[in-house]
Amino acid sequence: MLVTGKSILDAAHKGGYAVGAFNVNNMEILQAIIEAAEEERAPVIIQTSEGAIKYAGIDYLSTMVKLAASKATVPVALHLDHGTTYETIIKCMTNGWTSVMYDGSHHPLEENIAHTKAIVKIAHAAGISVEAELGRLSGVEDNISVSEKDAIYTNPEEAKIFVNETGVDSLAIAIGTAHGKYKGEPKLDFDRLKTIKEMLNMPIVLHGASGVPEESIKKAVSLGVNKINIDTDIRQAFTDGIKSVFEKKPEEFDPRKICGPAREMMKAVVKAKIRLFGCNGKV
Ligand code: G3H
Ligand code: 13P
Ligand code: ZN
Image (tube, rainbow, N blue to C red):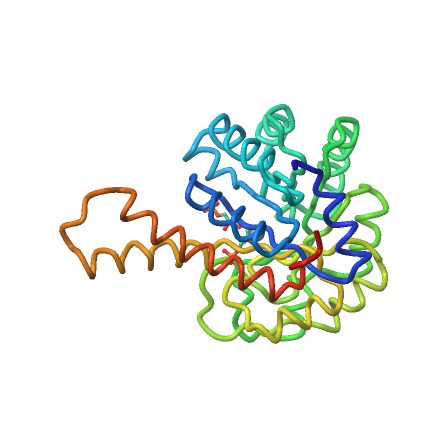
């Protein structure tokens, strides 16, 4: 069934586990995620970036996810990932998305607060949940100094002000993860996470979780992360699946025989993430 992001994340916050938020760009990715969530009896968040909407079309994505959610026996939220414009956010709100992220993390604090607050007002009036972001994720995967960290990572005092002023339902924080593939091993600032969770006592979101060591993910969940975003690991499984078909049979040309194995490989990745995040068996 299709539910709000807030209902899934409030339960995760109370229950002390994290829910997987997986990026979707086509039918095979969506089917892999839904089948994995069903088999693991896990709530799940299907998220679409602005790039996914541009690629597949808002009507295709909305129709596919609504169909998948209506058939599913686990709670499914449809979430906009990294919304940057009012236009995309309002379009998603009017096309059945049950949760939106407004990413104003590149703006100064006051501006981020003003935009986020305006979006929360509209979204909440329509019963739609809102995620926002404070701090910057990109390029922080390498070893950086304490002063650099303080400039880039989420400041707990600012986070408190941000949440009080905007009324967001969940907050994405920067503690050392980055989008895409890591060059070295990411080192997470767990003390910062612990402080933020204690001060905010609300659902916390971790972006850029592909490639983060399992022990770090487990620790982040134990310290209060409730939504974990995964895209790159699914992209990799899709591509590995397709490559393995052509390695065995270079002359293959039936799309079903090319995308089918890729779908199975993505499903296996999603199932493993769900178990790692601790949301299996929660439905
Ligand atoms: O955080 C970014 C997600 O991985 C989405 O990436 O904008 O290329 O769809 P995308
Ligand atoms: P990864 O691609 O690094 O898993 O990040 C996904 C993400 O944060 C989507 O918002
Ligand atoms: Zn992200």
